[in-house]
Image (tube, rainbow, N blue to C red; front, side):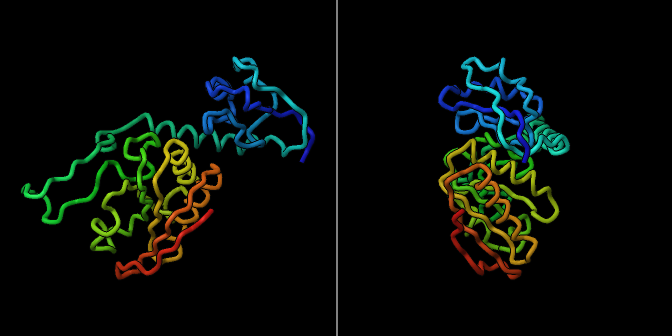
Length: 242
């Protein structure tokens, strides 16, 4: 810890306009619950470039004990933010968000005898926008991508009535997933969150992702943690309170 200059935001004055967010070259400020917040001291260089962009004079520079500004961590943070924005702004035809309407009883289908319970597209967490309509007031299923292959009744037993986000905690970027899930939680008031993973140790990393996303974003949310064995059966279900 060192004594240094650092940004201070008066939340009572802040109107959430977001001008300070775009003015901060280090990405140290974000809008959370309608207010500007300094997300980490290590991203703030204390130079105060954001001060002149606040119409409410809610930002000042104070001198206090803090960790030092970390240029390397800031560059990594900015690269991750850039990737998130790119995912949200660019879509190939297969990534375009769609609400899927299920066929009614009596409607013939040439695709499958058992109807799909999938209600939206895409489903990969990496491709989903935090502001996608499927997350609004939703029961969200965060699923390890091996689960639907193991469970023959995945659609009827778990997917029905849920929005879904799919990912692999072993092969994919865990930190990216924590930030993406956190962005979804911040942008939407979910009815519930259920995490479903296989019994193999690496797959339980999905539970870690959910915990970290909730903790880092200070979301008041517990979730159901469902473990599926290699035979495709639900072997354990427990409520996780963060």
